[in-house]
Image 1 (tube, helix red, strand yellow):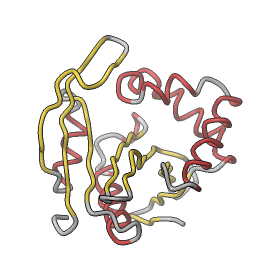
Image 2: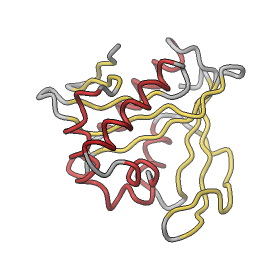
Image 3: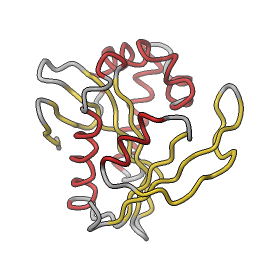
Length: 178
C-alpha cells in the first residue's frame, strides 16, 4: 500500500529500510530528542533499528500502529508519519510526523499530511484524527492548522522530554472538516 503525493510516496516502513532509517534518525537525533524521545532513544544502531521496524510491522499487522516512511523519487527516506493510539470503537487515531532537517520549510509535510488524512478517513474509515504537539513546536502546529485541525485544548505538563514536562496543544479534525 502506498500513498502518492507530489514526487513522494508514503509507504509502510519495511526491514530493508533499516540502514536509511537509522541514517535519518542519526541525522536528526538532536531535534528528535524532544519530539520523538522514544524513537530516538530506542534506535541506536542497525540491530535496534531492525528490531524497531520489526515491532512496528507486527503492530501494523494487528492494526495497532502504522509507520509510514516518506520516500522521494530517488528512493531516499526523508521523514516519517505515524498513526498511533488507534481506537477502532470511536474510530480515531493520533498522528505524529517528522521530516529530515534539510527538507524542512518546503511544504512536504503539509501536503503529505493532507494525503494521509484522506487515507485515514477514506480507507481506514476514521471519524476523528488528532495531533498532540508541544506548545513551542510552531512548525508542527502550522502543519496541523494548514490541514484544518482545530485546537481543542492545552494539556498542561502532559509530556516528558529530557529537559522536563511540557504542555501539549491538542488538535482535532473530524471527518467532513478536511
